Image (tube, rainbow, N blue to C red; front, side, top):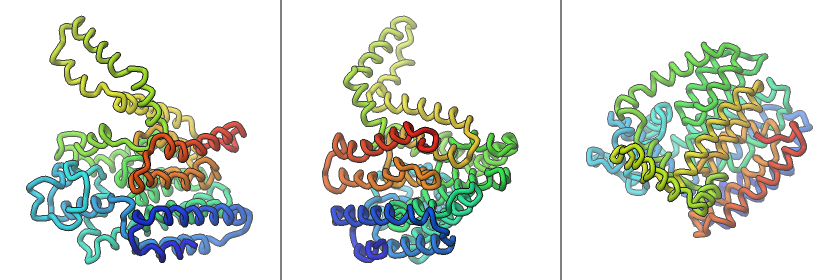
Length: 435
């Protein structure tokens, strides 16, 4: 079914969205039917990896029309390969005019410098130098994804879990589509963090190797940075782990910080301006708007100015007093709480899954490929809520390509069943608790 899916769509998926979703839905039903049987059988590692490969190969020719991220990857790589700085120079910068090409013309957000960490930029740069950059990059991402599948099999064995459970990730249509089809860089980071968790298992514990892989994950995409304190405790040598991981990250990140004067401006723009399909964010900012939180805080700032006599110093606060930004501040506090809670975790598999799951729930932006960070752990724990979400999350393509408003019905179609399954898992007790 997966092979036919790829062969049918050697053209624009976004212009055939209904058929795309129907075929992906059928593929999920096939996965739902096959995986429980594989969990109870003795499935050879080679068979699982071969199935993962066969699922991905037909998707490589797909044009990345459901997401334009890969265009940005190749542009950033081209800029870096030319010896210029994609962190300081937005694509619209006049200095980059000689590099402009068809990718530049098709790429959105030309005013925003890159948000991707140095290891990702290095990988983009290599792909941009090759004869067929798009295919070269998708092959790189797919190779990393297959490495993640292999490491997940090793992790299942090390944790005494059925190898068949890894099929929930290795054969998941969402994973194959977003990596082999759309070419998302998340595959590099996921492979690194699965490897880090593998070498945090008590039987295989190697703090230095785990720290190196953790740093690689952060330098591919910033998500795993939140897990460093938890992984340090689980390593048995927290000081050594943090020194090694943060040292490697600093070596790569310091030149970026020096070139941009601190936090890269693209990351600031992303944090302040990006928002889409956040499960808690979407209802929270609407609730804050209905409650009049922003005007109330503005009145509070006015009162503070009259009490302190500080006027010019407090004026920069006003542009941020709007419901969406206030919701992001509250959810940032929720992310900090999730990191603090993770310090109690002793199991790298369950702990990483719970942490990444909580971080995603607190995110203001949740695109389908963001789920790749949670799915390896949900697969090993057979978490029904998150595995179901890997199918439901594809509905989030409807607002962009079918003109259907996200709020409220698409949002409820995605997150309503997930919330019910998550609550049911909690009620069943620790064995059914989601990440």
